Image (cartoon, rainbow, N blue to C red; front, side, top):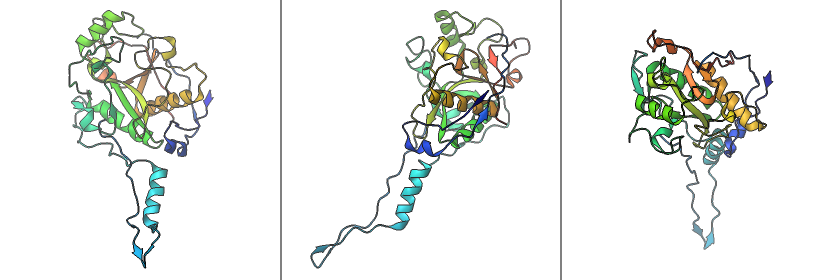
Length: 283
């Protein structure tokens, strides 16, 4: 099946200048069981100011160099924040804070707010978006890919405490959406090998996607069945980007991604397959 990407569009006019190339989606194999620094556009103006000459106002002069800068800013969008600030640990198993390792990736931990299925915070105040260093490397790769399209990642969830997972299970004890914390490996979030992510434009504004976070309905399935071409394009961009960066998807949640080498981080006796999907890469 071929899906034609027409562009990463939003209310940001800049996005329309970054068309996406057509990509094909291969058949996806289904497994069997379950920011940071805001980028602000700079205002440029001419340094020339009206002066009186023989009591006649002198017209304001236009600086050609400044005009070029304004034009370039319009075409290219806001300044790019470096994708990586702090050096990553050499060990893939080390825990890192995404806000210091990859400040260009925006963070909005939904379980630290009331915007989730529990309608109340499940995380303590000041919860950090922790992840394994090896997974952070892949997220930085995904962010770099999305920059080509004037888009970026927003992380809705990273490391999840086991207590929070237990609370979610009590709220929605259904393995299709919430993993039983006492069965198998538990949630991949608790091992630091999974994230919940969506797309934003250069200004941090959310791009249209199939549903909001924690929408446990058929509309949140990985394979979009709606009719909105913009939503379809955005989801395709997110999925192919995460596949290229080395992530699997989840059949029932379009926003959930697990690193493809997750078995490295989970004890062998606990490693069991989930409802993950092998996403199609574009390479």
